[in-house]
Amino acid sequence: MTDVRPEMAIGVFDSGVGGLTVLDECLAQLPAEDFIYFGDTEWFPYGDRTEDELRHRAVGISQWLIANDVKTIVIACNTATAAALNYLQTHIEIPVIGVMSSEAHAAVQTTRNRRVGLLATEATVRSGAYERMIHAHDAGVEVTSVACPLLAPAIQSGDPLDARIVEMVREYAAPLRDADVDTVILGCTHYPLIERLLRRSLPNTQLIKSGEELARELGESLGRKGLLRAADREGSYRFACSGDPDAFHLLGTRFLQMPLGHVDRVTISL
Ligand code: DGL
Image 1: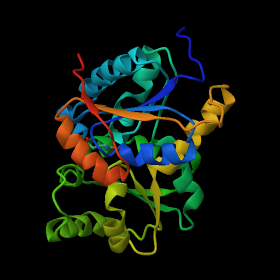
Image 2 (image 1 turned 90 degrees about the vertical axis):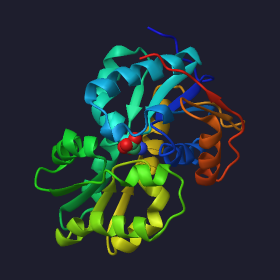
Image 3 (image 1 turned 45 degrees about the horizontal axis):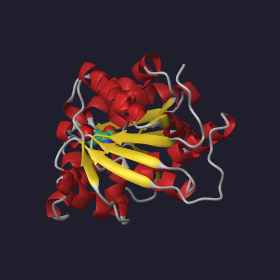
């Protein structure tokens, strides 16, 4: 068994900048921890990948993170969590947590009319993982899922928000309004980056976001394992990606609203 110690960092990965919405919450809730963030921009979008591809890729990324001394791995991507969380947990030796299960639980706790909506990538919707997790908590909740294949690429492109994206969001939100859901899971970590737009198209609904739920779960899990850092320090964070580091730097700085520093380019072998 690989030895993990409190002073080691936490590894976080996503297909691109979406996972920064998770990292952002983790930095706020766990300020003493060190983080290494990997954006798999060369492989973006994960939403078009097969389960098999995502599983092997997740192992490659995790091996790189482990070689960089992390004590736990956070999959800050719904698509990769749906495809690879259990696979990764059985193929690597350190603890791995993903998004999804705490959002599913939060949605069940939040809904009053027991109608929950899901916005996610094609691969996440196809996996049916959210429905299963929601129904594990309340089998009577009606789930309306909408695949949004164009949304994460539009966000990741970094193009200025325009009428096209407003229309796209309206179209994706329409089936959820028709279904009269009162709670919507933003089932892709990219979506909180356009939260304002989503709120306008989904009035009178509670939005459930991966970042807040995940950061809480991560803190609890590290605490119970005795792996939290002492609170008397300010942690560090650093970034790497598989694609163009300058593009990642530009987009990441805009979204994280914090200086990113140097971004390393890393090649992951499958
Ligand atoms: N941010 C990723 C997610 O949470 C997906 C975007 C993509 O690569 O398709 O699902």
